[in-house]
Length: 380
Image (spheres, rainbow, N blue to C red):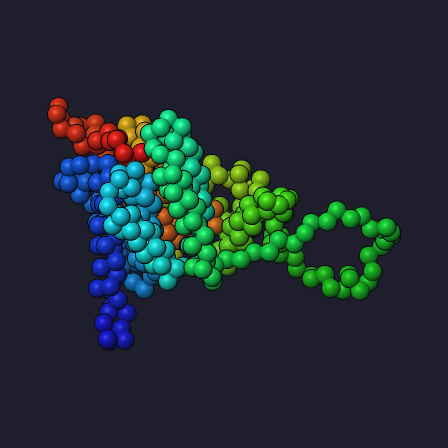
């Protein structure tokens, strides 16, 4: 590790990748009691050849994936009521996973902490509603429900210092003022400034239409649109670009694009891209490898709905879905390139793949053998 050569990072990246697999195993074991089957669910994450594109190279994905999985595992443990019925050490350990994950993400991608905040916001809303219902049904005391809900909202605030260096966007005020006098002709001074060659598509600005307190949605949407334009205009000729002609300039644009973004997030690269030629020979080889990986992913996704239905009463299931699908959507909205998206979505998609495999094993369970145990008292 003291030699100034790129290969010296391989041991560190290997440790990060293996650690992320262990954290994913802990997440899977929240649902699957049989260690052997839980390990099998984690194998795609650990062994897919495409993972070598970052743990054998100088990429930040190892830190980012480990950080996100630690953060997710911490939230899951904090959401389990059994954690709050145990010793204080269990609650401290869960918080430790949350902030360890946030720090790991902040080290390499400060904007990633902003995404963690947004996911925690959605999860906090869900937790608050769930706790209110349980307190009303007297399944949990009001003081304890208040404490848990407050802690989830407090996490969002405590993450603020780590968002320094993230994406900040100021939305100009949109005015509808009509000039008093409309000129009859364009002044010659302005005509001289018009370029002879006009680009095919001129970058637009964000159309902010929401007022306080919903202006935060405008800010988030503007950030997504700005980063997406950076990819679109910065790498217009990349071989694995997808929907590079689609810009996002309003909340309406984002909402209309969400179905397509979901399709790309879960299913790309599509079969017609598996055997196409890449810009480099190495990229062409990775397209062939991704074909096999995507076949496995498609097969596991078939069983994901069954797993969701089987464990629908567990709050942990919905936390994972909100977190993973939300993060995948955010990256799909801003990255119109399948190659880059393949890396950034890996940890989130592989978590859903693991749950899909859990659904498969639950279908094959023998009489008297419970692989995916039902929610226990105190879990949600």
